[in-house]
Image 1 (cartoon, rainbow, N blue to C red):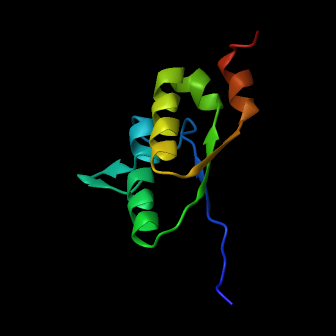
Image 2 (image 1 turned 30 degrees about the vertical axis):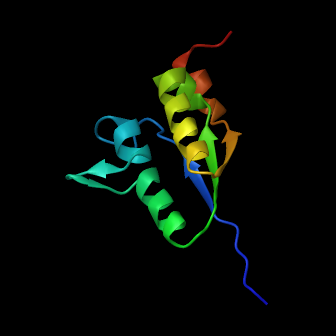
Length: 99
């Protein structure tokens, strides 16, 4: 029987987790001229013929803008992966942008 696995990755850039540019550092994983984020993960998955589930944090729309989060989502969908949403609602409250 062929083993099966469910691979899931959180895609989020919560404030305070990176010294600068949380999206570039925590999502794209750009550090010291190398890339350790979602593009590298997708390359590894492609190499092994695997698909994964990526959970994008919708509070990122409020923190960084719809365009930035949309770009991330389009990239992951373009790679053929599942894209699901979750919400760190505490950041909606902390930013004071409640409607």
